[in-house]
Image (tube, rainbow, N blue to C red):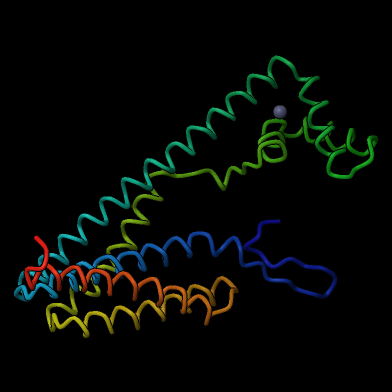
Length: 237
Ligand SMILES: [Zn+2]
């Protein structure tokens, strides 16, 4: 049973949302990140009294830098996760080839540990070993599923892409107006919308999620506004 399909218990259908919310949460977080960091950057530059051209330029630079930094970070992180998964698989393959009896015993113990009585655990383990021993070990010993294997390039592209979508909003707004309050207002409205949407699709409470991103985003923009203001009035630097 995969978590994206409705589970049937008698006549009751239960829709699980945790499988779907994984990539969705990543995409929403990437967009949130793009909005908050780019809008904050532009507000900081705008607060120095810089020209609209400079404000929009800072936004564009922030978009490119942020997207590439997200892609690199995600690629490195998911690659090392994938390396660890591949190493685990190699160890299992080696052990299954050289110590099949010990591996069968190990799998039996796992099922006993999960509550099956020994006779049934032995039967289950033996049948799974006949069918696809490696898959059974990867899944039940290591918690890995073939469909769940980490994909570094895909993850990097997805996080860079969602960051760009989010970051493009304040840049486009900046083409119309670089007033700090306009940038902040549009960014906060979008953050609240995304927070509520992401929470709703994931089956979580909407209001609380929206409030969290609003507070976080608001603090970031307020902080860069203060920095820009101090620099603009010559108080620092
Ligand atoms: Zn094993």
